[in-house]
Length: 263
Image 1 (cartoon, rainbow, N blue to C red):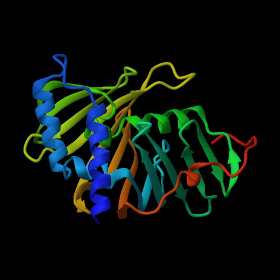
Image 2 (cartoon, one colour):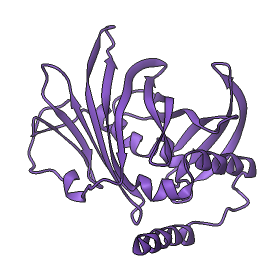
Image 3 (spheres, rainbow, N blue to C red):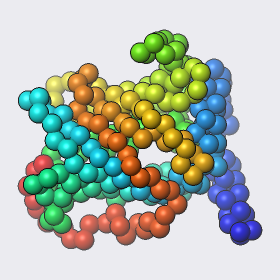
């Protein structure tokens, strides 16, 4: 136990020693809101240590353009690499009467399989998956690690709730807008744009978060809705969330290579 505590302290020391001191360009109002938000999610220890790796299971409902829906199961596995400031991520989808689809980011590329056979992902699918790696609510909680700039936009009402609006900009210039409850400091929504090759204008994504619960000392939304250009396209209801479980980098590497069909 003593070694584990020292290891935890060491990781946080490395993180904060490497993090930039807030400069004059950092918005003090935004920083105050972000720090209160981090505290609402369990504090920096929960964010940087507990959320290093984990697995989320639940049910997913896809809303198709023709008005129909498909329901299935979803499993998300992730491994955050503090030293590389990135996150390996794998999403497994199981729908009735359909092959099992797995989409993975291995630290270099995004690849997919159907029932274990390699496939070539559609450009839109790959672009959306890559965008989600950095446009998510945890990016705000890890803003110091990512050397991001935060800016206070103002206060507005969303569904009758007062929210503070904060923009986060990463060193590569990508921006995510967060809508944070002025009362609870929970992240209720986030928005970002994704450019897709061969598509004339960027797609506006919005994620909305509901049903917050405490899991192993950290706050987690158990229901997530995703919108594309204002249209609901996906709803996830998690049933099981576990952090700190055994997950290795090898799980995110493809077992083979080859050509496949586009999905």
